[in-house]
Length: 235
Image 1 (cartoon, one colour):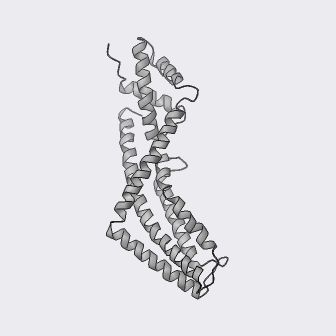
Image 2 (spheres, helix red, strand yellow; image 1 turned 90 degrees about the vertical axis):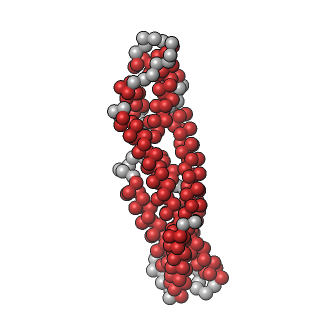
Image 3 (tube, helix red, strand yellow; image 1 turned 180 degrees about the horizontal axis):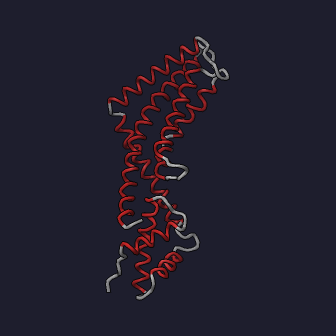
């Protein structure tokens, strides 16, 4: 006898079962559904005549005390690995594109000239921090706020978007946190070094944010495909 295949109505009941356990993200629901549906079908095959509700309860129990948690952990690890690879691939493409590269060069020299000018004219209006550093920090904050408003709704957590936006923060924060804290006198070697480091940071932020736009578009497209599938079964 062939293993039974779940209908759309039955899959919808599985989706609702998953949602009742606190899972709301479409991609995560789809990942759990894939494993859960297989187990439910096995129960229905092994015990003909079993009700769907009983099959769901027994299938869920087979996952053990932690329930769907192992699937969630594997999903999150896979997403992190996948989008880290996607980000690096898109970053390499961005570095070969004339417009973002040109904008990053403009950002480099704009910051360098501003940093030198602010240092020379003692433009340190907040706690003695070079105004150019403050401008770079403010630009990063505004871009982050823009991403948050554009790509996140309310307080709903989206692991894919969070993972994408978290790419390369290790390289960003040393520049944005340590650089403004440097109270360095103008026309010294440390001042020259910090002006160069800050300029590299400004240039890289342009490349990074341009890349983030592209990777977020990939993530959103993937999410849309799954959302359409779930809508197709009435979820």
